[in-house]
Image (cartoon, rainbow, N blue to C red; front, top):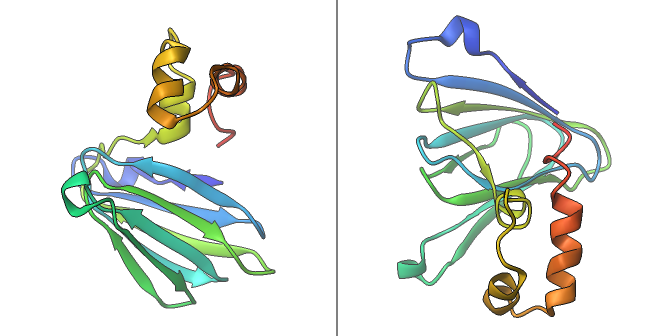
Length: 146
């Protein structure tokens, strides 16, 4: 669950968000096209990571965070967080823009309106076209529940 605090920070060039994770909960792979993000874990245990660019061979940088740990997600990089502990986890994230934007990867690719031609996605992801159609049907409902 994401809780943003936009009013008090309006026009200051930053955003702040509190993220509450149930055990097994995740913030799926996404990107912020206009901001670097710094995340501070307050309680629980999170696996976090980002994927570097194609030029850097799409390397995964990841770490398990414990209370008090900090992790930085560079601007535009695909990143994620998942609660790998048995208790709730709470984190605060600061973003270097009051309008960082967010693109959730699976929603953007499989839930676009109108949909991307299934043959294009089947070739891009090396999937059977029926799997792509299934994914498009699942993601066309309007996005994640947060």
